[in-house]
Image (cartoon, rainbow, N blue to C red; front, side, top):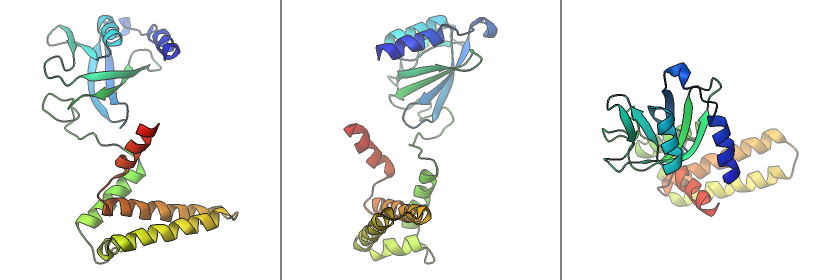
Length: 208
């Protein structure tokens, strides 16, 4: 950790505050979800205080003073990492947010939530949830939910066996297709049990 902090300090020593009249943009990103939460501005003093306290501090252009996010609401942004862009004039600050980030009560300053994002899997998870909440007679996924948890669990078992069988051969296409089928049916099982991928990831994070 100490080596990482020294490396970060060396990188930040090259920030070009003069280029931007003493203030640099600071993009705030949730360390876990990777969602952008807000944008603020920092001068050298704000950056130093952020590093010293572990709580993100900006320079408020309206109040004309340093402002620690959460100093009134308690919704602090706990510092996890700081990165400097290629032009040395913009910061990417990764944080762990305590409560909503926006003063209007939303998770982000764009009025959006801050869910975990697993790329295409999150999109697929949304489709599966919709098929569960709004059944479609023509949907294979909806038909599985209708048959009940035992049938869904059985399909996961069947697909797992298929993956094991293909793993013993050298047909890459079949192995990947069966793997995709297993993951898809497992996500259906998660939804049938009332869980999301995020719940499983949380268990893995805790174990780690």
